[in-house]
Image 1 (tube, rainbow, N blue to C red):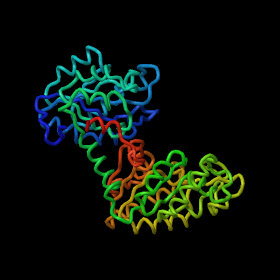
Image 2 (image 1 turned 135 degrees about the horizontal axis):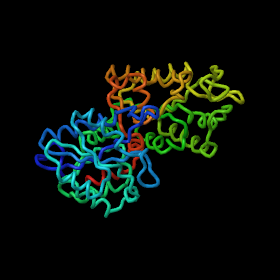
Image 3 (image 1 turned 120 degrees about the vertical axis):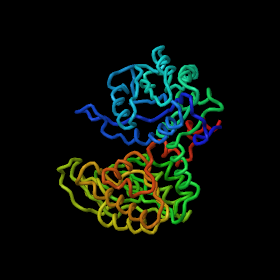
Image 4 (image 1 turned 30 degrees about the horizontal axis):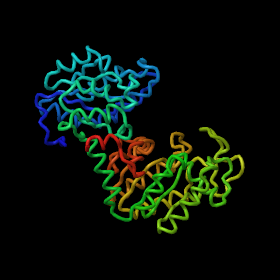
Length: 397
């Protein structure tokens, strides 16, 4: 297998699978967060600097009925050009004759963005013949789309097979894997994992896997109330997955047996309804009155969690502590983010696990104060669940 840093790109067209599935502002029609585009810059720039040309391949949204303007990558082409500092050409399809002519005509230093690869159902089906057509666009294949590495799609897995000696991970993909491995296999202790979000069912596999490697697991967000229900607590109208109550009991029992400390929020900010202007108060997390719901962790929980984090040497964070998008319920997530930043400044290694956690540290302007912010929410989650990522496996085959 080739490696990115030693590959001779001069005179070659590199097909670079990127993850440009960026959010759009519905009012302006412009990219509202270009983090994923910027994350791919080092890979693209290095290929161009070394005398190659680049054919960018990406998905955008989840189109169901073929080509739709709302899912067209044409919307972001100008933004990619601006960020890259190079005029990016656009092909209104990814396997048409026009698209092949444009990629064939590329000169060193030029960049072509192909239309949304998901406009073809063959992409999500992992179709081999579709990947064979995509392969005609270049001389080598670089996968830099860690955010899509958990998808066994044509452009993330099958495409690699057409470049047995010319396939490689890009700089972003390599950085994502190296940082994840550092936490999963070489964590300095104490190792604390923060797991939040709404549902236990979304995070049960990662919690079960973390029991084998973490010293502390901090649990926040809506999922904490199912744990309190499992312990016989009163949680009012808080989110609860009844079918996961027994799972929570088993996790708590296993943690005790394995010597892993699970930290649940002792208090909560509760509201009489799910709204920005709801009436709120502080309550013990296992003593929430009927018709009240927990929407953030409380001040006691913040202090307890902060103390654990400041003693940690390795921190993994996946999932918010509450509904941080609403100002009335942002304090928990914000203070945990501040504590992670403080621990990092003291020498801890902190990995922010994509998705809402990445959005939170960005919202609170703390991205530069943690060790690494992943671009792959679902991919990183599956990696820490112990699963093999098809996009990574295809590069190693």
